[in-house]
Amino acid sequence: MANGLDFEKPILELETKIAELKSLAADGSIDLSQEIKTLESRLEKVRREVFEHLTPWQKVQIARHPKRPYTIDYIHMMTADFIEVHGDRMFQDDKALIGGFGKIDGEKVLVIGHQKGRDTKENLMRNFGSAHPEGYRKAMRMMKLAEKFSIPIVVLIDTPGAYPGIGAEERGQANSIAHNLREMISLKTPIVVIVIGEGGSGGALGIGIGDRVYVMENSYYSVISPEGCAAILWKDRLKAPEAAEVLKLTAKDLIGLKIIDDEIPEPLGGAHRDPEKAAQAVKKQIKKALKELRAMSVDRLLKERYAKFRRMGDI
Image (cartoon, rainbow, N blue to C red; front, side, top):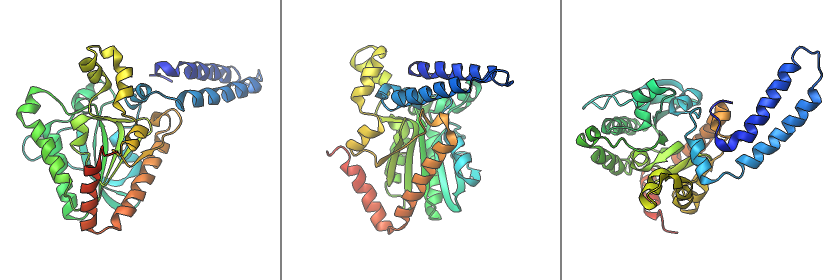
């Protein structure tokens, strides 16, 4: 497997050995079935030992894995008849934040999310998933349209943070995020938010107000990146692993702090190991949440959403 992480080395070594043995036995001249079976059994054991005891920093690394499914991948795997919406009608179309209308098993939904790139060219086009003010304005334009037609909103978060460049600040980055926070709390339609990768600071919060908020097993949701925190607290970005520990940014930590509602499980080794299985888990959680939220009156929906965010941190 390419793009392996440091702590995955024992797994990668076993996978390589198994692949070599299978190649040798391919023509049928040598029977290596027993050796292969033994190594596969050992591989399964090592995988569980590694991935069931990940540190917060290791989960951050998986959240950033270049092969991890992104918003557009989940859209393709979960929805039908998807139509993307472009532009904020004020400046331009921000390709770091995408969205549009589609159907999940026949139910109309609006899906909005951050989008990263797979290579250098696409990352530059997508701005590495860091949205500009026009991206957050585009998101709100779509949300208002969904509210008008009583269409539920699904938000997929995956960003290191909102873009902090001079141009973005000049065009009102902080104001666009603050505006979304205020407006989302009172949108008269169900909102389900899922952190599918990185959940960085205001960049995540700009589309992160929801009736249900979930974080995938190997994702993180934090006020700052571990490297940024380490640079501020210890003047040393190499202390990022320690920062990840104290930031309490994993799903289990966030549940304990009452920041999120639940964790969405991933395939062993991370969502990139089996994107289809990961998408099914996300889809299942979305459908369950929407069924619960659809049963509520609009007044109750808004009251519970407001109370949810007022309670955060009250442990």
